[in-house]
Amino acid sequence: MSIFVSMKRDDWLIIRFDYTEDRVKKIRSIAGRSWNQKERHWMHESVKNFYDLFAQEEIITHKTVNNLIYDFIPELSYREHYKNLLIKATEELKLKGYSEETQKSYLGHIRRFLLYSNKDSNLLSKEDIRKYLMYLLDEKEKSHSYANQVISAIRSYLLIYFEKK
Image (cartoon, rainbow, N blue to C red; front, top):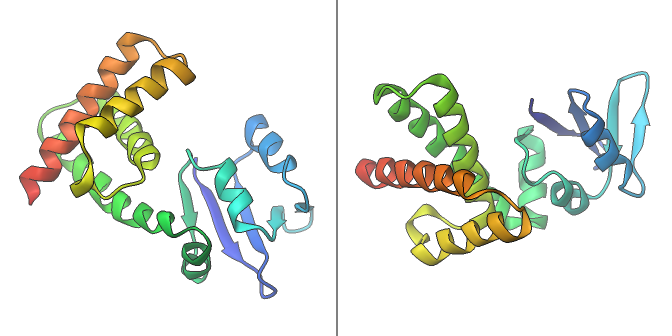
């Protein structure tokens, strides 16, 4: 369930997504947002506030929005880079015989790690992985079993990434 973002002529973001209570709650927390009942979308003028709230979700942007977004939040330019890498990772996991559930789980872990680290894959270090694992265990209160699955996913991703180079 992706979030789709385009732009209105007067530089307002047009935001569309499948309904979930959590998403609606998040977007309602943004001051200045409005709901267009007729066209069934949200509108908002602040790029930064929106992306801060929905950073952990897949956001698909119309090409007219990308430059504006990258001007305000340069780190998001990595998302397109990550997207291509995740497509390659999907193919490799499938070729290696991973089940669809494992592929889905691993890709989610990889995507969240890349968004958290906010670095080019060439610049990732053991320390980045360690910090992410501590974040998951301490702040997100995830289990060690969950952290071990994250380690396996990141290891698979890095092997795929550096094998392709």
